[in-house]
Image (cartoon, rainbow, N blue to C red; front, side):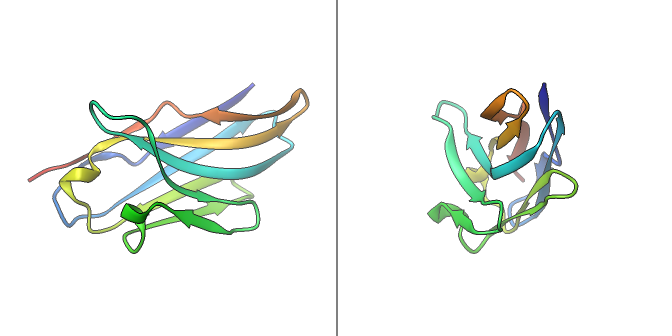
Length: 119
């Protein structure tokens, strides 16, 4: 069984910063891509950024220049550094990880962490 635990969300003023973390645990042989998604109230879940096993990154346009995704393979952890946050960044942020386990390869979702940007 694979589990993801996210942390780092909270209330921040516009222009502020947060760093989200997502730690994977369980019977994991290896981890391929790791990504962050978000879902704002009344909207569909959307991709924020993704990072491959060898460190290649891809960002949605709204995240470019403000957000940075990174990973620590030894710690099975993916991070999302968010700078210059805006009220429209308010959402529940989810991590998604592609894992290889003894029973096969599949994607796993975290439970989400709430980010609220408000003055």
